[in-house]
Image 1 (spheres, rainbow, N blue to C red):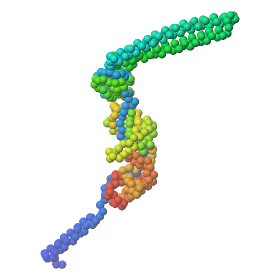
Image 2 (cartoon, rainbow, N blue to C red):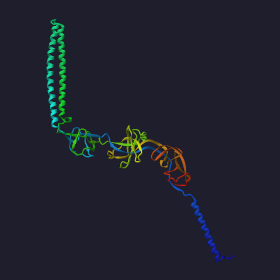
Image 3 (tube, rainbow, N blue to C red):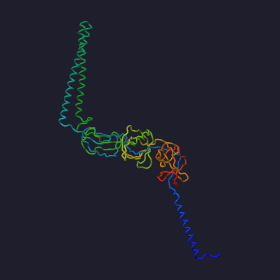
Image 4 (cartoon, rainbow, N blue to C red):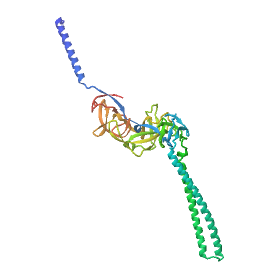
Length: 398
């Protein structure tokens, strides 16, 4: 057989190159027309324990703090205490130099005391006179009773002396009451010349701590004249703390006294435990950061763990446990979304996303109870994007 010449061989090579190029172009076109798998993150539907909580931010506060006020008018002496100092029960916190009365007022009060003492002396004399007359009337009445018994006088004379005796007894009782009133007037006039609690003007009244605790606030740090009743210090009662969480009223109705509280975000490692003591009976209006009007109520709790160093007005994050399930079918809440007024998820079946409705029950921040629509082991898409649609090809990352 004759060999092809050079020209024929050249044409054959060109034809082969063209055919190969055409095949390559067709392969690229076919590859470009094939759908690309969308990478998604997935999780499994599983049976597990479910803890349902209501989460809100809150703060600590002193439980039943004592506000100590000035007991008298006077010059408050400068205190050395500052916020955070520990004090013992009965410890002197500050002193008040009791303000003296002005001369005119004091002269009036001294005159009133002298007049009261004079009335007391007169009442004492009147009582002594009434007592003497009563003794004389009693003796006369007794003699007349004896004479009447001996038929030496008539009944009318006897009754007259008995009546005189009764009148003398009444006068003696009135004089005794007048003396009591006069003595009370003396004590009242004398008290006007004293400071509150019997402190002489110009003396120093000590302000003492009623309980052991920590000074939370010093209202008056400098020396100045204060009136009685002016707040001076606020002291905690034994450093006992309360947990105060302002919660939406629709969440607070699910909370009951005794519910467990899990405290995080307090600045230390680990979770602190507490319990709900009570829910305040009256709610209040509060505006959110977006300006939305909300009705909230304070839920008050206490730590059941040892205080790790929290003070009053510290910020915390609290999760109140309102329900617990030992073994239920759950799906991650990040897989749930609303469509047509019901809950849905995307389930991965044979590398394709399938839209599936479902019914859920109790729900926490991380998982929800599945009542119907999913089975244990189903693979669901979490955080589904807008690109995830019914039937789309997906590549699951679990």
